[in-house]
Image (cartoon, rainbow, N blue to C red; front, side, top):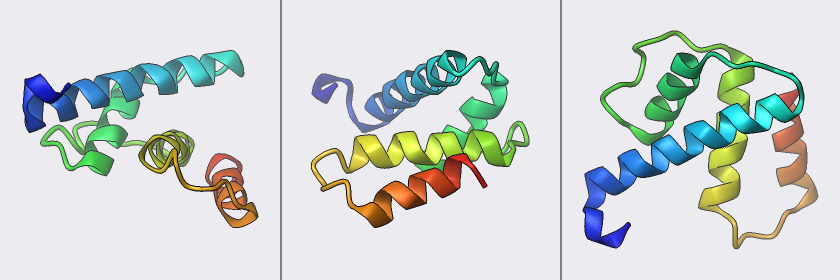
Length: 91
């Protein structure tokens, strides 16, 4: 990833996160709209493709949890953090 440069690394990260979101939802028997997932991830990461497809709370919640888990993987999983994930996933 370091060899790709910042923008290419960010895009590769977005693609990996998109696939994680789709596969995570599939485990629970949900089929997410890939374009909504892509748009939500782009919005969270500040990519120019943000907002191309309106997202919904379920997609945004899952993307929020995945990004928090990967960005802050070294941070302790506190009760508050776990509860915020639960709230994001189950409004």
